[in-house]
Length: 322
Image (tube, rainbow, N blue to C red; front, side, top):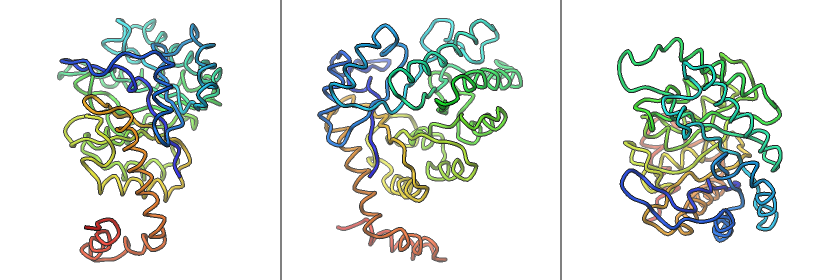
């Protein structure tokens, strides 16, 4: 059975360009909500705006009180004013160094709360227009800044989350392959990739295929789960828009014996918070259990059939009980 966690800001108030959703909550109230979600035992905490060294003692007390494990520390390098046009790729060395310091501090915080990893999604590092950026220079800066962050406390791996766009028109790290290239350029085995199912999907990629690529190239990976319509990062609940692709994704996680957290990066804007995250847990665990019932060997035998319509017939019999 998979371990399930949630990015904790989604348990409180969220907002988009037009509306605010749900009520603000204290960290303790978020933890109380988390423990109401059946099957949810872990938290991905956001540094430094949700957790930091000012509230470290409170965080440790609350984690113990509610018996919550820290799946990951998510370090935000886009909010500060000097990061708005890119922190890790800024032409200003002082800005780049400050962005790197955020990641290093997040590693310190992770160590203090017993987390075994940090992750960073460099959303403000990108561009919108032709000739806006020097791609050679920005790639070199990405290599230098992530290398500096990764070599600090290597016992706490750094996972880089790619995304096609938002907040920039195009993010420099917009898919798994490019992020792998960056990691291989750096040459640090303790830097990995956060594979967000929805980022892969709306980037016109196949999440299961990108997972297989990471596994084949022996790159560490950490997983965010959600769903969308393939057009935008809506952060819907799992299986709601791309069920068969999600089944395939879970199959490959099991095939590769993934032992890490499945962290819900899902936005309950208009829907009940507890019920939406329970839907993620239930859908994922039911798919996993059904694959176990079928048996991995039987499943793989079906997938090796030469005629795809025979494969489809097996998939119908496995998963479509009308």
